[in-house]
Image 1 (cartoon, rainbow over the protein chains, first blue to last red):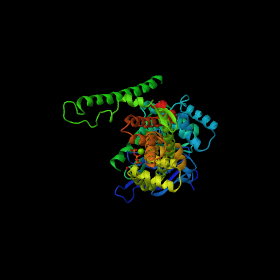
Image 2 (image 1 turned 45 degrees about the horizontal axis):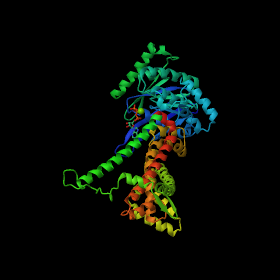
Image 3 (image 1 turned 60 degrees about the vertical axis):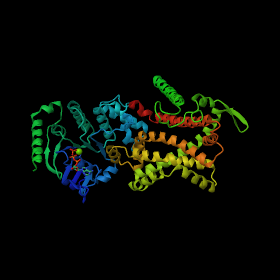
Image 4 (image 1 turned 30 degrees about the horizontal axis):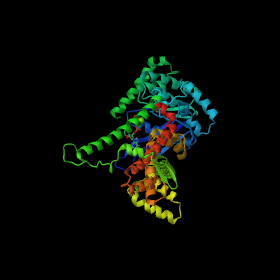
Length: 260
Length: 287
Ligand SMILES: Nc1ncnc2c1ncn2[C@@H]1O[C@H](COP(=O)(O)OP(=O)(O)OP(=O)(O)O)[C@@H](O)[C@H]1O
Ligand SMILES: [Mg+2]
């Protein structure tokens, strides 16, 4: 058994609308193991199945073939054990709840007491550098602030596995870089495992221990690039090793586009 | 806030003045041209004599005239208010039932696609049955079950109110984004939890406009119910009576119509206030 693995995907296929005229083979023969505490990025051309793969891991979709194991359990059991924290491209906050109540939502569902919930949501707000915004409504926050709230919400219950689908996609470059640093800080502080979908080459290089490059139609693992840049700081972005990694990822993506 | 309220009062006053002015202007014009459009041979759609269109002042004046109600004498407006209170109770029961049934159906349909496929067509068909045909049926049936007439009237009102609630409720319950639904799924939240934490709160902006319609319809239903049942009280009774005596005192029918309009507006206002209260947490953001 692979109890030590955070995620283990073996021969996973995903076909949408199988047998119909609009059948789409989204993923084919995916094999991927992720260690606990690892930060893994998924990158690839649009429509290659990144989100689909993330949804398979999170048991929001079932594989057509193959299996997905999370912490030695089926993905379904892991979801039922509430092992997942999810962050989507859009912050996805509930408009009618104040920021703190949004962060407390998963805690509410786990039956935490009111006092514990508000202590935790304040801790989380401090963590994402929004200490004074608990009493605001989501629409009173900027997009980047909302995204940070949604990250706080996902982290509030210390999920063993954090699944993020282009969480910074809608942010400007400066906010994005700032959020990357914060995400890494949170990741180090909590020791959680992260699977991170992105379109951005520098982002994947900056954040990850490993970058999984997917090729399209049907989505396959084209290559896996190990990244070893030590502790990330703002200086890392100007480090030649960082550029070398980015170049490696870019070349892998090029050969994907060409269709190898 | 004060400004807003003042503006609302002003709007109502201006609207009233405009209606009265149009009424009197039209009447005056008709009187000048012998009920024809000025300079043409085309007749006006309605005659403008005092029989068909009494003066606005006469109609409003009628509201304060003393009339006999059984052994008592009391001003018309008090009489109408008493009748309206009775009708309001029937409508309130009907509305509450309609809300419960409508939301119940909406939840069923949101929960099971099969329920939506099976029920929605019938819910639509239900509203094509004319109320005039349905009301006597309900009344006869109710009397056979020896139900009080008040219940039958409320049921007629329910019949009208459940529809907008069911249709808009369903839309509201289905309104959350896929992201939100997936988020709840990722928390392993059972359907019931998703209903209370996500779908119901998300349905409120869809529901309240429907409730305003339903509130007004509940009054219509109650009045039509009263008329077809022949109750001894209620606005429907007053309307029926004054319609029969239209030839003698047309102002009275108009006065009772004003009474029903007033009741409808009151219900509309009550629901709007509830909306403000329920949505107060998001209102700061919206406005
Ligand atoms: N629910 C669905 N039903 C049918 N087909 C789907 C569904 N979801 C995704 N697909 C198809 O699967 C393929 C992969 O989609 P997916 O969303 O995983 O791509 P992606 O890599 O996340 O793309 P992007 O970078 O644009 O977000 C696409 O061809 C898409 O059309
Ligand atoms: Mg995607």
